[in-house]
Amino acid sequence: QLQLVESGGGLVQPGGSLRLSCEGSYTLDYFAIGWFRQAPGKEREGVSCINAENSSTNYADFVKGRFTIYRDNAKNTVYLQMDNLKPEDAAVYYCAASLKLLVTARSQTDFTSWGQGTQVTVSS
Image 1 (cartoon, rainbow, N blue to C red):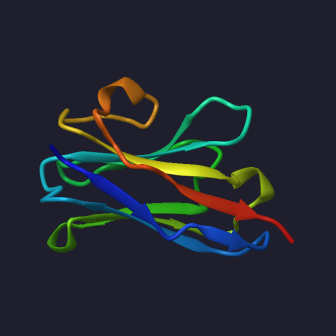
Image 2 (spheres, rainbow, N blue to C red; image 1 turned 180 degrees about the vertical axis):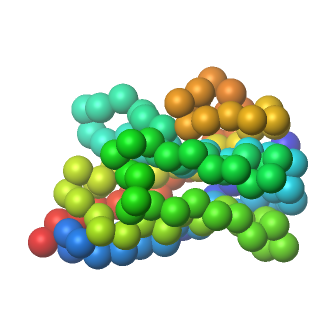
């Protein structure tokens, strides 16, 4: 079974940047990978997704223009570059994998393998 490990979280000031990594235990070539986040007291929400088919991407409106998702299949890794971070971006970020051909991060139930999460804190 595919295992995913997130890394790259940490403390950053507002306006700063972080790059999260999601590494698979084996090739991610055939998986769509999504990034999700959950802040204390809030429901988990979809952030971004990159599909296996042509690496098409999609983003939640609240991160468009600030976050970029991309994949490096040679490293079995999907990245989430987060720029211009805001305090409201603070959360535990999770990556997850789906074997569906085309998915979006809105469809959490399409994702079957989940990582353990990495904490992102945005504070001055």
